[in-house]
Length: 118
Image 1 (cartoon, helix red, strand yellow):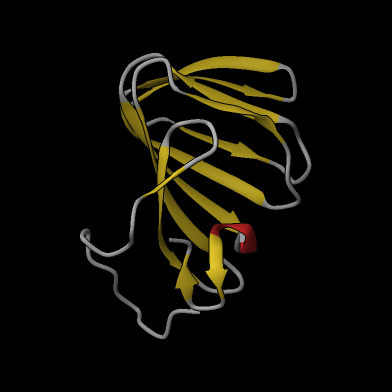
Image 2 (cartoon, helix red, strand yellow):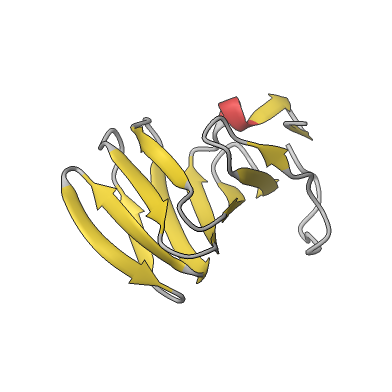
């Protein structure tokens, strides 16, 4: 886990996701993780679920977001929250970025404690 309070925009390594997008772990503790996702137009975050509560901020672009069978189109500045265990996914209607927060942290996004996945 990180022992710093501050993270710079250039910190964190970008990695490819299985869906063909990119993500970088920005910062995390055992209780909370912040991750940036980058999508090209048409890119998808496949439908999935996990035990973590997730909050996502649309930093750039426009996304079609589906949560538990409900779909909405969200743009820059919009936010969505996914309760634990609900099936959800996104499709980028335009090139864009999401800033996701997870609680607790996503151990599957890190190679080992304190080291972002690379």
